[in-house]
Image 1 (cartoon, one colour):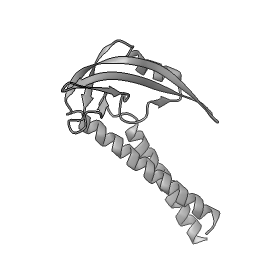
Image 2 (cartoon, rainbow, N blue to C red):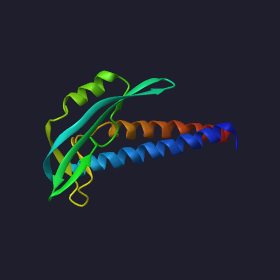
Image 3 (cartoon, rainbow, N blue to C red):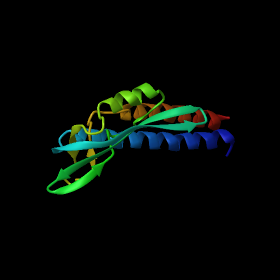
Image 4 (cartoon, rainbow, N blue to C red):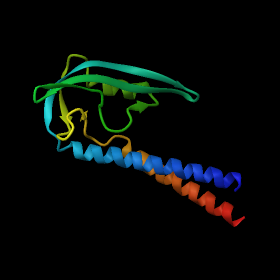
Length: 149
């Protein structure tokens, strides 16, 4: 096995993970549109800045409380999928919708009320699926080309 085969195999694994993770988030986003809605309260909303080798990523972090059938729950999910952005203004814009103390609509799973979300719209899930397909196509092409040598 040469380096091209190893790299192609690694990229194929990454692409499969991206595709399945994107599909999982897309399915949850779709299903959550029909979940029951209760009122909740935003407790914390903050911008988390993470440093990486290539720069920074900006995460919209939130914590909210809600009650289902007399039981209180704490949620942290704004939407299914990633809420990390390369630009701080995108994360800040998302956080502006949810200032602390705000009353919000919380969608929760009827089968598991601790699973909740504020926004059931598709996030970056579709892009991750497409990116995974692209990476997979590149990896497969590279693998096939390396096999012919």
